[in-house]
Each structure stands twice: as structure tokens, then as C-alpha cells.
Length: 595
Image (cartoon, rainbow, N blue to C red; front, top):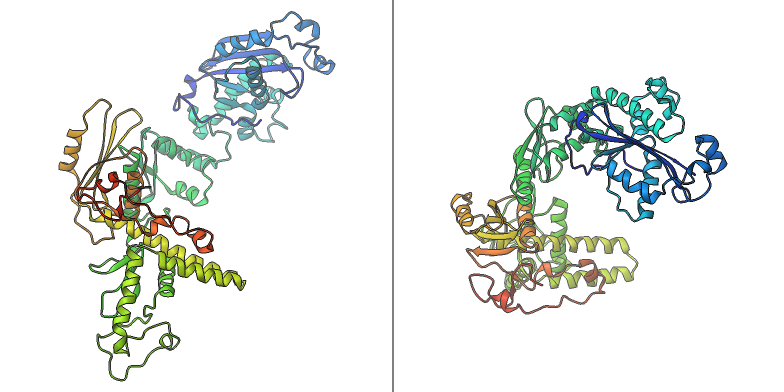
């Protein structure tokens, strides 16, 4: 059993060490393992601010003889423990003595292991004391040049302890008190002055990084966003947390293992907190601040304007193109995380529909002398560039492709499932994987566009969710952008707060759907929140619905590709779903999130 030097769930986080009550404990036992041995002696000293507040000492009847080698080591004989109180009597007294304190022991896993075993044996719940191990602290600040080992007797001699350890519980506990105080004195110059510092004192953290932990001083214990700032007040990194101070402090401990974050911490000179009312607000603000400042140490969501879309162009003979922005009148998929993913979606559609692949803009009537390309010669393109009679057929192809982009993806799924089945039969597994990845990219892009488009068109959406304390979390969304949010205390009518949100919310100009007015990932966060349990739609300015036969219905494209899953079963909307929007019943439509 390996105890942490200090557990991190501390009720008194931030307490200066001189105000912390420590109970230094030492046990003598009949053996080295709690599973087969018993406690023979308790010794404990309660201290705070260098002052001894009390001591606890008693022999314990182990319920059997004390082994000879233990008698030689400790001097505790079987005769001495006969008639002593049993562990059932001693443990409750010790737990009361140590209540509300931080336990300290030299080689804490040994002593704490026996205490936990005794609690389980006697039917007592273990209180979950924070634990400090002086062995681990000594390894941090006592070098081999000073002491050959970190045994209690060695450290007691090094620090001139007033009590000499003698393998008796109270004497060893008194010696450990002196060792603890000496170790804390050495750690103060390293910035370890509070109980929460002690939680990571034994971590192998470089001194220059540990000293930066003062950057977290004064930060609130509240949810929000934090910004690490550099020498020129530039933003180095943006993050979010439910507890700003605790999260920022973690960057100066061994919990932070990312090399680039260690580099960032060494550069940082300050941290700016942005307190948020709700977790959703914090997540949205993080995205916006990353997009605004483009911090060099953030890797995600830095440049939303670079997220590519797939567009079915608006021209006499439309084609597919990877673009950076959405335009009126065209059909779009996305946005995608990368240009490669967008191109894979393009190839999935082109493999299904005979859309032209040439990049030039074609006239409505073929030019004299125009010649067809290689794709037309092999039957992969209807060649409207040279064949006047191909125009009506090409229009049908475009219509089918548009339907697959905005609604039912069945044609693309079936085509790719058949391709993969053929390739697997021929043992062309790498080619089959490529086809699978193209379909997956298309389905992700189609599903995302189909989810974003309805939200982007809604001028105003207000929703509410119960908070853990019985209040309300209110969210106002305009065109897919978080325009305002607030919380209402328990037993308070939320209606005035809703009206206030509407009056003071950010004005958001209408975007070109499916692109939302804000960051696409912001819209994803909002959709995720709206789909979470307990959310209630308060009001909608426009109907909000998705086609039942949409890309979102194919939740497991891999199963569909392999040909082992039936086509998605379609369900008629329930009466509640049909009336969930101000527009009334919507044939063959279902509200987002419907089963």
C-alpha cells in the first residue's frame, strides 16, 4: 500500500503550516505486514506551530504472543501486553485524539496501513486523514552527503533531536516531531509554507518551477478561465477549471508532466483570472480568448477561421471544393478539423456521385472544340463541358449529392459499404481502410453541418437547467453564439432574470448557415449543453429541428461499413417532438436529441 505524501482533498487548503495541527504517530507491531501482524503499542504527539498540544501512549494486547525477534528489537514482551487494552478499545480513543489533524509518520505506509487494517477489523470507518511521510520529505531536502540514509535514527542525529529513537512508540514519535520541524524549516526557502504546498513537497519539481507557485496566490476558488502572461504581458496559455487557484497551482507540481507546460511556467510572470458563473461560460470564454490571443502554448481552437468547409459550388455545373468560408446559396459540410479531413469527405462524395472533378468554372453551353478529360473517358464524369445532352443528368447528380450533404447519407454509406466488402474479399485491407476513413470523414462533416445549421438560424434561444443547489442555470443563445448566461438562487422565480438576459445580451448578427455566429466549437459546446439531462427549452424564435434521416442517425459508421449492421431504424416523431417548436408539427422531422 503506497500512500501519497499528502492527500489532495484537504478541507483546510491554503492553511499556513504554523496553523496546521499535526499528529505525529508511531506504532510498534508484531510483524511487518498488517495482514498477519497486530499493533502492540501506540505513540502519538499532537503539535501546532512548534508547540506540543498533547501526547497519546498505550500498550495494546495483540491477542497473542510477541515474537522473540520483536521482543529483542522493541523490548516489548508478551508479559508486558497481557492485560493491556485491546485494539477495539484503543483505536476509538486514538481517532478522537487525532480528529481534524494531519497525520505524520516516518515511513507512513507502514503505520497508516496498520491503522486502516485496525479500523476495518473493528468496524470503524477510516476518516481519511491527510498524511505526511517524513521519509519522502527527507529524500527531497537531505542529500547523501549529509546522511548515508533516511532512517529515523540517522535523521534524528543529523537534526539533533531532543529524543533518541529506541523502537518504542512514544519516543520515536517525539523524535519524528523534531525531524518534521527541521524538514519544514529546510522547505520554507523552497516556497513550501502552506499545507497545500506540503501536498507536493516530495515531488521532483525543479526549484525554479516550484518558486513560481506564488503566481497562484490570490486566485479565487471559483470556476472560470485563467491566462498565463509573459514578460511583455502577452498571453502564453489559456485554460479553464472549476477551481482556478487549485488548477493553476498544479502547474508547479509533479502532476504537470508536459514539457511545453514546464517551459511556459518558466517564462510566465503572472496569471489573470476570469471568474465565470457557469462551466459552460468558462468553456466558451476559453475558446474565445484562445481565438483572440492565439497563445503559443495552446494547441487547440487557435484559429477557427482556418477550419475548412466542403462546398458544393453555385454555378451552371457545380463541383465540390474545400473552402475557408461559407457563402449564401451554396451547400456546405463541416467545418473540419483539417484540410485533409475535408478532402477525404470530398472524395467520399465523388466516389458516390459522378460530380465533375475539374477545378475550372464551366459555361452553361460547351465551348466549341472542347474536349473531355480522362475521367469522362472512363465513365466517372458525365462531361457536361462537352456534351450538351448531359446537363439534365448532371443536374440530377447534383441534386442527389446535395440531398446526401443536407439530409439522408444512405447512398454514400451503401456505396462505401459495398466497396469495402469488395476490397476485403480481395484482401486489400489497406485500401478498405482508406475507403472507411473517407466515409467516416464525410459522416462527421455532414452530421456537424446538419446540427449547426438549425442552431445558426435561430435568432434567439433561451434554455434553463436546475443547478445542484436547486437554483437555475440560464443560457441565452443567438445564432449559435452564447449571448448571455446567469444563475438564479434556489426558491427564486427565474422569469425576471430571463427578461434581464434578453435585454442585456450581446447583439449577434445573423450568419450564413450552417456556419454559426461564433466559433464552431462554441456551438458544439452549446449543443452539448442543450442535449444534457435536465435542460428545458424556455423559448425559441424559430423552429428547431433536424431531419430524421440525417448523418447523425449513423452513430456507428464502422458497423455500417462492415455490412454487419442493418440500416438505421427510422422512428416517427412523438407528439411532443412535433410540437416542441413554435412552428408546430413538422412532418418527418424530430427535435435534436430525440431518441
